[in-house]
Amino acid sequence: MEVQFAVAKVRKYAMSESGDTLEMIERPHGGISLVLADGQRSGKSAKNISNVVVRKAIQLLGEGVRDGAAARAAHDYLFAYRGGKVSASLNILSVDARTKTLVISRNNPAPVILHTRDAGLQLIDAPSESVGTRMNVKPHITELPLEPGLFCVAATDGLFHAGKMGSSDLFKPLAALSELMATGIYNAQAMADHLLHGALEKYDHRPKDDISVVIVAVFANESESIVRRLNGRIAL
Image (cartoon, rainbow, N blue to C red):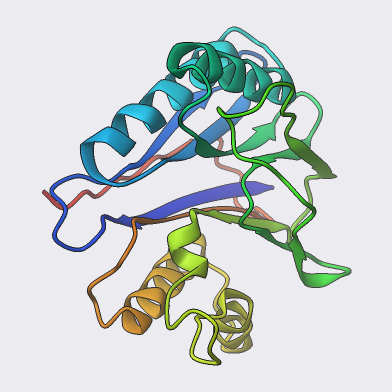
């Protein structure tokens, strides 16, 4: 099998800095974890909050701590550090090479989009709280065996709020993905770019919130190559 991961993100219009933070780390027993946080408010203050949350989660994941425990510790740290006065959404997507599973940890009211070969597209939208403002907050955990056709989309709420709130013009990420997949495109970066582009169109290319989209996708690997590759591109 081959795992692809992709990110597409943009800051709020007229802001010099995004309040979303994304970091990736290789897991001690093999695999990768991608950690995405969206700090309360916008700009530099939000960035400071999301940085605190992501750094704590990444540190613990790198030490071999399980995803759920890392998410709870990140919550506890933010709660203690800022006295329960600020919040952040937190998503952790992990490909665990030891268990051969995809682990989805969610402290985010915004849903996660999931696709499996058998069930197709679906939303993971069980109630979930952001971290930082209340004691004993726990992540919603989903764990699935790695198999070709599996992919997961985690995003900050700017993606789901694109368009006119309360109207039929609100962006529908699930429908946008369905349309793209109907053309035969399953590439992780293409899917992330398509979702971001659709949201930006609803915002008239002046997003009213930071938008970050993270995708992890699993494909059959017909090549015998054992080379691992990572590409990146950032607009400055």
